[in-house]
Length: 111
Image 1: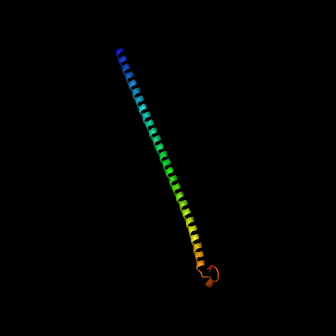
Image 2: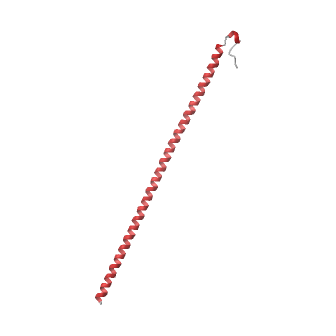
């Protein structure tokens, strides 16, 4: 009977040790899975932040390009306006010189 009791006790201890080992294994697997998910989430956040930074940089480049283009167009328009002014002035002066002194009676006929 002592032998049976000792065998039962040994069997129970063995089963308890197996249960404990199984629980520890499951806990370790759970922890590893959670850490893996956390690492994946961190990688995704980092990738999103990087993409956002790239997008903002691209947007800034495009805005700078548009600003340069607008400035260039503004300068072209101003240059064209000055040229038109000069042309109109020259045309007016040329018209004044071409008018004969005898007919028009004096300098340019301003209309």
